[in-house]
Image (cartoon, rainbow, N blue to C red; front, side, top):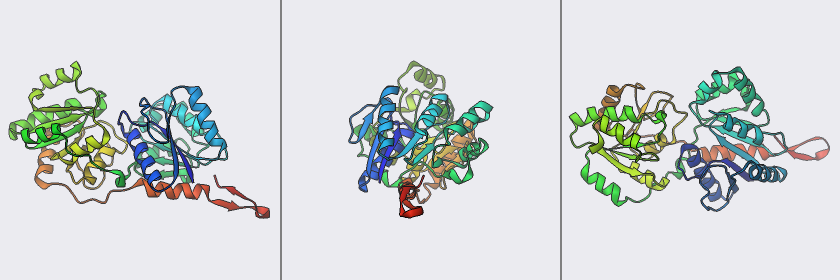
Amino acid sequence: MRVLLVGDYPPPHGGVAVHVQQLHGYLRERGVEAVVLDIGKGGRPAPDVIPVRTATQYGTRLAGFLREGWTVHVHTSGNNPKSWMLAATAGIRARAPRVITLHSGLLPDYLASSVSRRAFARVALAGYSRVVAVSEAVREALARCGVPDEKLVVYPAFCGSQVRPGPMTQAVRDARLRRKPLLAMAHHPSPVYGRKLMFRALRTLAEELPGVGLAVFGPGTRTEEFLSDAREFQVDELLEDMGELEHAQALGLMARCDAFIRPTTHDGDAISVREALALGVPCVASDVCARPHGAYTFRAGDAADLAARVHHALEHGPAQVLSPDAGPVLMKLYGELVQPTTVGGGETHAAH
């Protein structure tokens, strides 16, 4: 079995990139020959990770792996034209088995807005043996495009076996001493991440929990826009700015906070929610999509409900959950796709 993963690879540590990194690690630990074609912004040297920064580099590398019969697994959001061009180029018909995972919670709205988008999606996915949707909502959107049901698989992009928090840093240790309770939130400048809503809820929580603090990590925490919002909602003194963290460091922070918050306006299947649950940390997330068992959900956009659910989570603690692991599921899928099939005259070929 030889598997080529195509997608973003950290840094930065976004959801798709983290899943690609974790799946790559899972496969390598089990002796599978696995390579990543990194189409993201990172470019950091890593074993068996090939950075490609131009369309020519990408096309040349991909063609080589296809000619050699590698199983190709594409990871992309599915919520913008660039993502679908990637899907189309990697899905070109070839003997090599192809799998694609579509990750974004914005995908259903993106496809619903245009007949031409749905038609392009149907054509782009025609060459894939399997199409993995991270949620039922994503699966339904793809089915409405005309993707055959027998190709569609629903499974979260999460490898529970790869959740390995790093050691406690001095910054986390200091924050723990200053704040009780200490909440944590992954940040991104995009409004999808719900920063203003979280700040509004934090102001309410501070009136009832004077020692509360919020550790924020990710890009954009030191911009003027971020600082202006913090001042507007009067929470600047309640924040612990961790900046951009390596993934193991982010897990180390999450493992040592009292609750993890996901106040997003859209989601596919958030890796960070599942990571918090796997780490035994109470998790409060918006109800914009189906959340895994054990997560506390609040009404999306409702800061008062968010604050109330954080209270509830702190009082009741984490739920005991069994975390899914995409690694074994995908290993089995790859094996089925490359399993030799007997044809007339005793010859064999790879099923695809």
